[in-house]
Image (cartoon, rainbow, N blue to C red; front, side):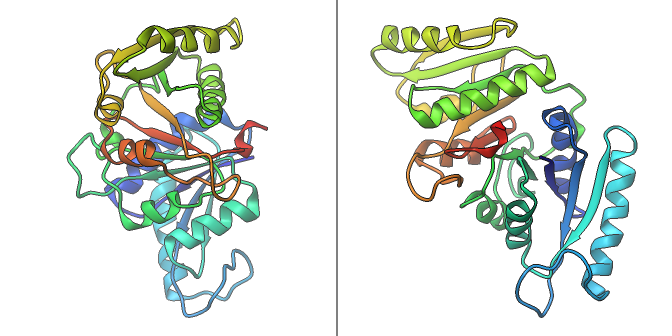
Length: 272
């Protein structure tokens, strides 16, 4: 199951590439760098279509992507269309059993923060697999993934996020931090985190922290130091199974975070 990086020849496309390269250890398969292109036809055609100016332009952009990635990871490069960028990524992910999509945020946001473009918003709505979003300027960072943070409150959605976060920490040899934000009952949440930590593989370096505050979104978006290299959140637990459906917290966190955020849908197939 491959990781799909959504690329356009833009700074935020480069941000997506940098995050995708760092997340590559999650999959044994080569990463897939996909560039969508529009056209006059309905539906998604990946192979066998006649050359078009839009497809030729996508292929040219993928040449730039090749030069950015170089030999850092094994990668395949595909032009996807004709369709809107969000539809192209959605349908490719469904057809090819993608385990994780990686996107860059909008250029409109502040440097170091997530600000979602319309394409990212549409991809996040109903994506069939976890979606990782890189903040603006991520391409300029030279550190590794660093500590993996998981927002955890004991719900099934949070457990999905924890399963993904634990696997990411294992594959990238990084620390795992379970985080809860609570205005009250902090001891209850600490016990919850401690019990969740005992269920994780022994080889993981796990820490837990309960932050006493009522503003869950603001805290998760800009966690106190040491900040995680990536924050994993669960999506809400209703609606169509195995799709990202942003709840009120994950929806706002993914728009305001100072680090990459991965949103994991209920029943995420990435666990296989």
